[in-house]
Amino acid sequence: MKTISKIIAAGISVFAVLNAEAQVTEKTKEMKTNYSNELEIVNQLSTQSAVVNMPVTKLLNAPGNEELKSFFFTPVKNKSALKGKKIAVIVADGFEEIELTGPVWYFKELGAEVEIVAPKFNPAPERYGLAFPEMSKTHVMAIQYLQPVGWIKFDKTADQIKVNDYDAIFIPGGAWNPDNLRYDKDVIKFIQDFNKAGKLIAAICHAPVVLASADILKGRKLTGYWNIQVDLKNAGGTVLEQTVVTDGNIITSRHPIDVADFSRAVENWLIKK
Image (cartoon, rainbow, N blue to C red; front, side, top):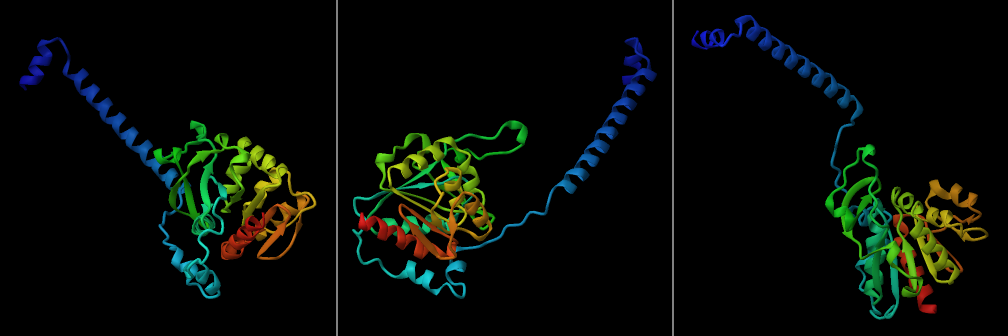
């Protein structure tokens, strides 16, 4: 009553106050209704989230992969086989984990220097509604099949490297990684220049499509993941169903289970040079 008396004394009617309160309440109800409707729509636009654990050990211990497991767990005898060789890994977000970490581990065991090279950080426009962690400026994301599993730091960006600095380059697969690479002008030009120099270019799984974008496959024999083989044929290549194919300065392979054959083929090519 005292509050109402003060309001009346101030020349404000009780009706006006009550009407204002009613409007605020109605506005709040409207906002809640709109929020509820928006939330319902967002739920329909979203899929159920799940975290899948696919450790590398699952791949190595899978039936039929005994030779792959032996490749990693048999000690490397000649630790200096690739000493003095420098290899660049050309990679972007969405690379197949074992197709990078496997060959990198092996080449380092053989004494090679390995640098990881990624496209220059170029976030998508804001209207795409994507969020990038801060570490994406210095790291690239690994996947296992289509499941993001971790991040690895890169050493340089594609606009910072020179053909004369490396003896070989290799590109891991992964469904997203090649698509990210084949659109990058610095990556494509570097691959083209590397090919003109006759230096080794190796690509596994989905990665040969990057070579198709670089237009260096005409008349070449190669292989790749099964669902990109038609793209390789359309780019002028002859596709062979083999674990690994070497044609001049280009080595290609099909799948994560072929990592051992792929890595040995790169080793043998570099030793002969």
